[in-house]
Length: 190
Image 1 (tube, rainbow, N blue to C red):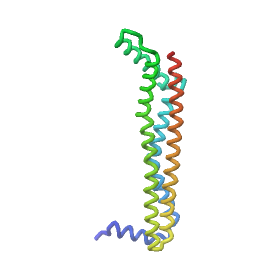
Image 2 (cartoon, helix red, strand yellow; image 1 turned 135 degrees about the horizontal axis):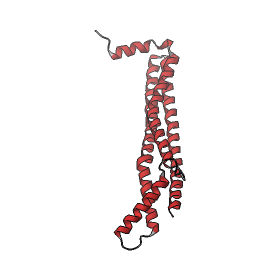
Image 3 (cartoon, rainbow, N blue to C red; image 1 turned 90 degrees about the vertical axis):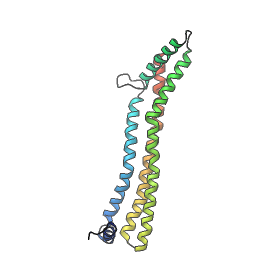
Image 4 (cartoon, rainbow, N blue to C red; image 1 turned 60 degrees about the vertical axis):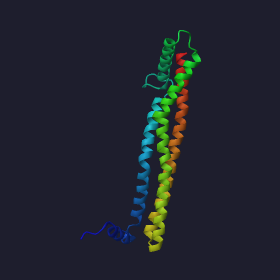
């Protein structure tokens, strides 16, 4: 008869005396891995948003400046075709700006926020699991397991909160870049 998962796990836990460091490093790596996926996805979105919001550069890709100019021309031509009279310039500028901001938010800001907002619950789950294992290890009084559980509880929270702060900081910085890029596009088309 094959041993069950729980008997194998119990046998592994009973043989932990010689592997305290390995447990601590493994648990920290596990919590870092849980935080790594949303953090890297959010960081890649931040990088793409950074290239899109590059103000005042026409030679490096299509930025928001080019998009604002093209949208202003499109909104102006459709408004001119719809009305026989003159469309106010302020309306065209505001419409183009709003379209660019809406596209930016749906393509970049909301997904970056989603990945950033996933991180604190992942840290909290790691903290809760680590404390539960710590309480269990106190019952069987095993020092290596207590050390690994405490490492899980603390490292998952630290990694998740640092990742959250990084993504939210980049998102705020990218909003400022977007505003500068839109202003450069509006000045170029004026």
